[in-house]
Length: 81
Image (cartoon, rainbow, N blue to C red; front, side):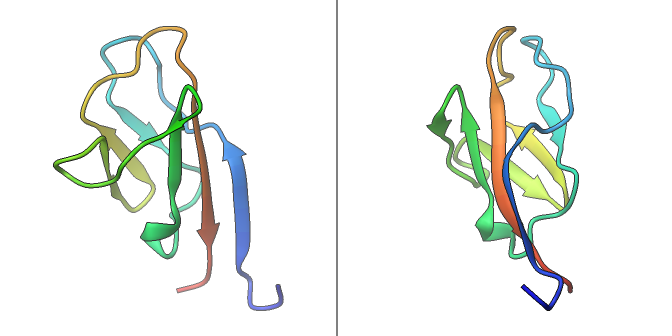
């Protein structure tokens, strides 16, 4: 893609998966934000305050902290603003 847009696939957000941490960070901010597909142990999570997580820029805040041994992965689009 020539306009600087790229796709991030199966990235691991940074942050401790320890049963108490609910905040994770992506390497870049999804643009559009709705392009983020977040998976916990392979299951797709729902975005929104009344659902599984919220997104602000590149920061993910989970409603429930992932447990030790869980896996978190993200796929999303990044495009210039």
